[in-house]
Length: 103
Image (cartoon, rainbow, N blue to C red; front, side):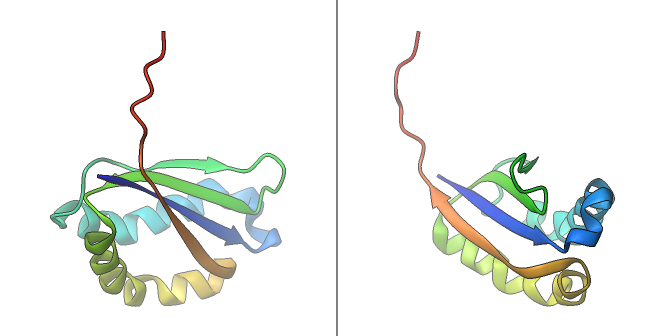
């Protein structure tokens, strides 16, 4: 399992509507993602304190290959939406969790 970290870059004029916009985005891609065999759990959304135009989604996924398959399916679904609200394409990083024992 991996964690996908997507960073979306809002246009500055949309920062005050970030919750509505990201909910709309989730409504577009959520059903397809939940039906995908790579889905593991819901995403969590975070807005950068230093740069409020940066919004991150973090979620577990089966593996990078399955995630690439999902992206190929969802890009056409959100192209117009992305062009309307975002100043740049999202970036995606993949993380693996380390089993560090903590007390």
